[in-house]
Image (cartoon, rainbow, N blue to C red; front, side, top):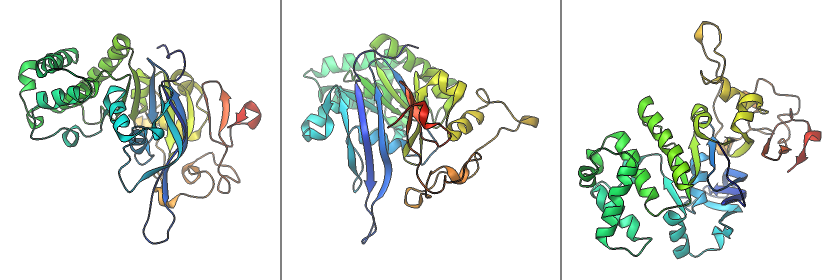
Length: 336
């Protein structure tokens, strides 16, 4: 897979998101100082367990953090423009025409009382001056592009009449309807069986090749990242703990959390005796109850003295990324 060239299409610098609490308690940071870039035609995987802050990150990229949450730091630039400086009308144009979003739950994202045709036509006409006839023709083209069977019939159907795989593709069709340059796909395969999952990943790869689409693929499954992504961003407890090209990450992951995720996937890791896969003990801490020092240290089999005292620095180990761990020697790179 070839990463995109040229300046970044999406440039995220120091993104932080918080939710206020009652009374005088301090707000809870659910995303902390997140920085990464995506270039045109590049597929980047944002991977981590549930509760790591991935879905809130996806919403923050489009200025859609649900209230009372808010972006409290950093900036998001798309095609060189700072989204936080835009008026709401400008942001609405970016959402769809610039960045398309495929949410985790298609049944809640699709309108239950509108046909698929109505929702596709509305999405297209919101971003381009076109007749209903032209929009309907484009909707049919999209369903054919996405290999949805009997596309004319599907256009007349309501979300509850579609299968899980068809609903997921319908969401993808709506996200692509305004010809975005970047697609943010939040757990797009979570409700699909293995066959449909493979078909959807093949489809995303084809769209990247044919349309030059950039993709941010959000998932808890590292095997999906290995199958389709150029680079991987590993997120834990609201912050980035490692970033690397996918081949390099699978070959020499720097962070113990990354290594734990890799070992827990049968195809990527090495099964333990008697066929039992290793797992990471415990669970991701709640954002309001983060441990001192490294957020991962209570679950880490490689923790060192002092891991429970100070947060580890981010160490840039090479041009494509780095890691946030005391096991990474500071002299290998420049602390960011």
